[in-house]
Length: 200
Image (cartoon, rainbow, N blue to C red; front, top):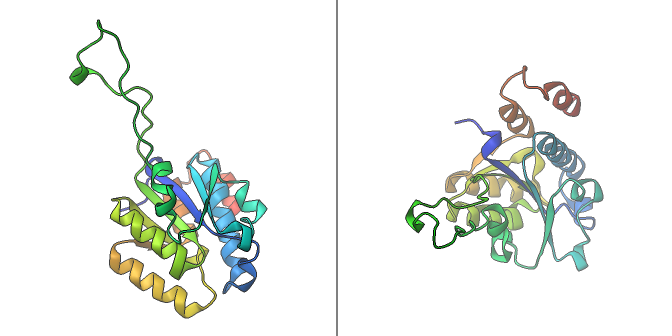
């Protein structure tokens, strides 16, 4: 099963100013997250951010926050507990009409956005906020794809333990380039050259 760009959303978890300096391989992890977000913007994949207790840990780094449609401030470790799932799967609007309209059972919901049930997720710390958010998304019946080279924790051991647990729970483990080139699918994609420049 390959990622489908038309079914995907990107969630970037807690790349915060006071957290990133202590994250294992933090510079590489952040660079991959920015690359993912840049490609998502180019391919019109909705991108969301989260920030854990930003008054203490600072906001997400500017270069990443600027690429997110919205950023959710949270105190729970799982962003789902603070409403992320409602952003990812907004409620459909009720049908509109008057007495001469079609019967309700024949009406189609108006302005219903196409559902994107695949969540590509990356972030810090992998064994806390990313793990709990991803597990809750799986429980809410989203397909969850964890971008391993855009995730980390303060220690490599905690990060890797989270990957083991996520794989066991049904998440797909991928890398930044796997995601990017599955979104593209072909070198004939009109944005291939622009994406290739971001990957180099």
